[in-house]
Image (cartoon, rainbow, N blue to C red; front, side, top):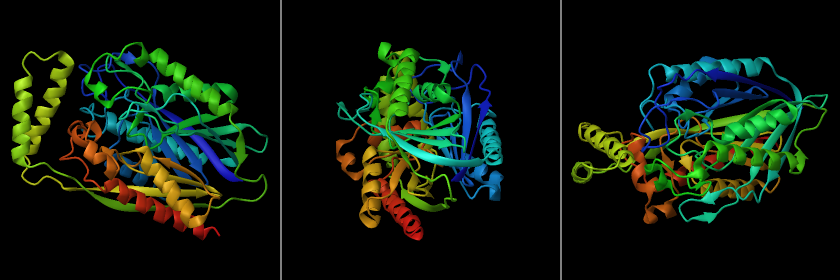
Length: 429
């Protein structure tokens, strides 16, 4: 068995708070569809904390870890990556509301402490559902089929204490016309899981940089995506996913007798940025300024963001050319949770799984998370760079980064993840 606890803290998001996730969204929030939460899952002293925001700055994640200190043997803070949440990432993906970033940190710390204090001995089971018919490769416009994973913790009586749901798919069902704060489809997925048989449900995103529910990344430049981009559709998808997860065959990971050992390992990784030259920035800025007069409101808002980015870049005599990320592996019996920063593509998760299994054999059950311990932008695999597109060429401006990540950055994360994952699994033998 393993000691498991969970807790939820609600973050008050005032009306008028800037929202994150769409450069073309022209106004702040007008209300709340479902509350912004920080949800903590304690697994044998290790903490996984998920917050209903599009992105978190790495300094916020570091503050959560520092304040929890030795109470947790390991702590990873994840953004669910909802595109209907408040902006609170230090100026990335939208201007943060004063005080909200600190409120999110405070809620994450409270949830972590409560989860650790509430642990009880539990068994774990893992279910995986495929053939969902929901996820698409948005760069190629074709269906994709990453698995929906559901980790369930039950106490000695069989009561569900907590569930961890994981899927590689952008929570971006609602479009830029939505002005209600929401967790998007993960919020409805969690609610359906909790209504089924209790417990606290936590959602964490997979490597979904190239995956969503069926539209192009460039549609974030539009205000209205139609009926397929509505709160009603987010509810439908969330409830469908919950039903599929609850009916998928489950595999027991821990026995009802004995104590499973939990191991964790983290490693910092420096990643290079491809910072454009001042001449290139000036040329791009001139082009955007020329397009600005008479542009429709969503496009004008987008151009304003890009022009402001160019002004900031041209005013910085020494832009940062590297970014420091954090990769973590958490082992619980045969289960290995691997967490990556930013927005990697699905191929990175696949290669990490392939690399770990090649070194250790097929026995491990591996789940790879994205948006963990800092979200500074997209991390495409090297083969995506010649194709260009939003994730490769444009997104860094909305992320307020000096430039996109250089080709090879995703592969560096992959190598680090494989190395620490193999180390943990070999230690358990």
